[in-house]
Length: 411
Image (cartoon, rainbow, N blue to C red; front, side, top):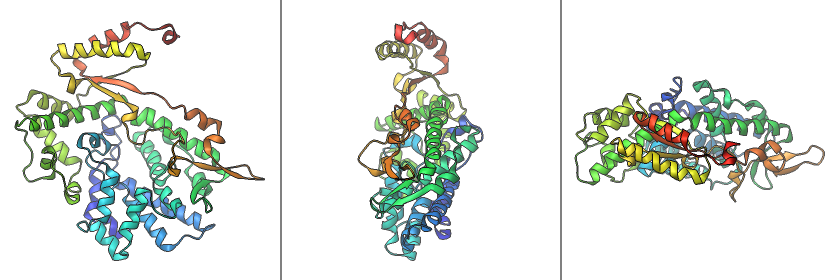
């Protein structure tokens, strides 16, 4: 594990913020993917020790699970999820390449330990590893990744929504050897309820925070504009010979090139683009660098009223000289990877949390069959908002507040 931590690919995670642009909203959110990954390894080690008291776990499987927990985020690009949709990459695919490509120090370090270890780690991250229960500890609805980032993000942002009883969950985790899955003993059901409620509120109050999402909208608009200009044959400055230059040209990256980038590459280019000859790219870059972000309004109105409001607001933005493609951004909760609330739906066992129901004659069930609190969470919530320049907020707010409300909405 120390050799893996000392690789250049893992050390790079120091330069990628865990919450992306969360520090634009929460000043303490300066923590990195590096610290989170160490936390995931720590939790995996503790969980395996606890499970080993009741179930025999093969030593090689244990090492593979620990390595996968440590390396699960190594494929993240700059600003993590904020850029994935624009650049068309997925960090899990990049992670699997990082651990299996002979070009990386990670793969070499894994291979020195065991020639089969790179593929075994990749299969855990992909979810095809057997025993499946160990893979679920890395990637599922109740995994060491989520268990760490909820508490860590809650601490660093100062938001108390993410607190839950980690110790009780670790103590109650069990392996259902018959079905090859993780479950929680009956004594831990309330702790899992608390964990799922913590996830729900962290997404609503932190990960979907208006300012954070607005900052991401400005970043994506600037990148979108740069890509459009280059596609039109116009000049956009980029550091020559870099992976970021290849991204702007939409050229495929090798895994080594992908792993050469971090948050500083994006910030550096955004700083340079402030002097761009293109007024839109220059303006968006200045807004991003200097935190002059978009305003945001939640569309908490009946569906039939939204279209009229969106059309009217878009016209206001355009009439003030802002191109709506870059300055009028719709934001939906469903656009966010790992959407925040628990549904328990799908055929993949990783989409469900199983718990023990009863003490005298215990039966393993999906948690919403046992918990009324979780059934309430499964209804989820809708988040639909629109982001736009602060310069037009008065006109947009006027339209928003003057929009007719149905009788149901008024109630």
